[in-house]
Image 1 (cartoon, rainbow over the protein chains, first blue to last red):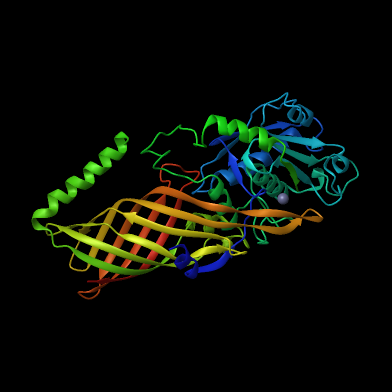
Image 2: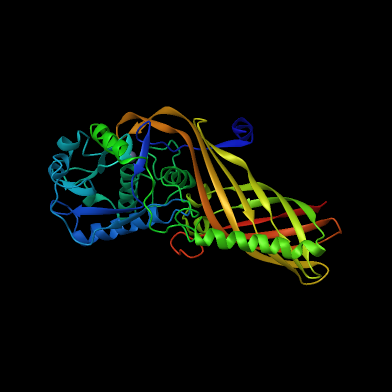
Length: 234
Length: 196
Ligand SMILES: [Zn+2]
């Protein structure tokens, strides 16, 4: 059957995952936290751009993950996350030492995400470039591109890798992106990680049930195992 | 089985039992052009609008059971072809749907139908590694191995115009996530039905 379906298909999609067995976050509602302390843009500007990026990711008809912004600014730092002082949450953090901290060229890369690369997602840290004198400092990016960039990095935080399709949000460059718009390719990737099943979670099932992910012992093992597999994606 | 599932099953069984006495079952074979995610396409600035799901062919079998002179129960089972395969040939997305429509014949030529449906999207992937740009360097990314299924409850509406005894023109609207404005989307199909 599978081979028959392959024969009836056309090449179109190109999405990837950041790891060979990335499985998404073990939840259907994910809250994103923002530490605006070092940001080179105002907190209001950052929040408005982030809300637009979250809205773009939240409207995929076939996916079942809802992202929200925690309403208050937090003081959580990358060090808190890395040392386990704070629970594992997607955190947005502005870095005034972006090039050194992320190991990237601050003149060309506006943001970089460190995330769990394999198994269940449990760690995500978005660094925004607030390094003074750098061309790719977020203060130099217009609103639409900023939203596209945040949605792209959040795509990584959700487990997506890059797409080879130049129109996709998850294409490596946001140079030609006017806004946070997802293509079918991006939507298929998100749907694969967070498939919507209205028989289980919809009006005919248990609306608030957690997404099932095996036994708790296996989850614990996987969490311990995957914590060491954290990688940078730009 | 949840209360909702039991209720739906009861409605289907009772409907089938109720029509057994004077059923005149027929089957239509439909060939349609299907366009999904219309709202996405309409709301997307160029060049992104053109990248949202393209028009695909839909093949559909539509068993019909008449319920008296004017009404008809239809259970269309459709598959959308072709599916989509990833650029590296590793990911396949395949779509199908099943509807439960109550159709009313307005005249000799026109019929209107409305009812719930189920849409499946099946993702098959054989896994693989792809080297892609990542900032100013490259990085290995992965396509997953395994399959994943999406199940959506949809609302279907149909208009049918009978041209000949065995041929009609059909137009269908499918609404996904009707109760969720953020994720609501529409698919539209237009084509011909051949009645066996
Ligand atoms: Zn990226």
